[in-house]
Length: 126
Image (cartoon, rainbow, N blue to C red; front, side):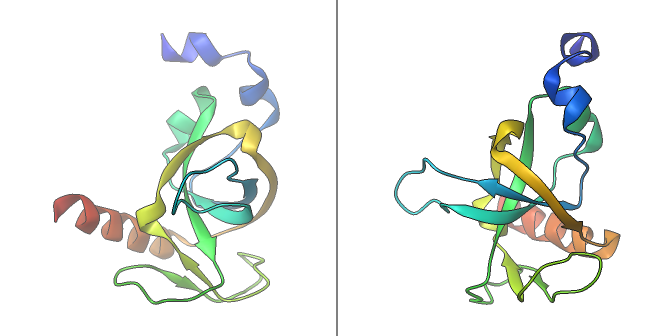
């Protein structure tokens, strides 16, 4: 049912997004202390959801490193193509329309993705 609903949509045919990819996106409009503006974010939603729904689940990145417990710190490299060291703000997890995502930047490793999932597990457990 889910597959049929989104099989031939704009989102499915033109924006192929995968778990672990880093995309530039626009978070505005926001309220209060939500992360705002144009910034990179890592897609954490699974690839079935990414393929068939018009949304993805992301964690925004920031270059203002605060070393929040459990948050992954990414150093720039050839894989992620970040310009500066960045902190994955796992506690700012958010589902967003694919139309907010503008450009694929790079991707993180499987072990980095597992660290984000572990942090999410801690957040949801405690």
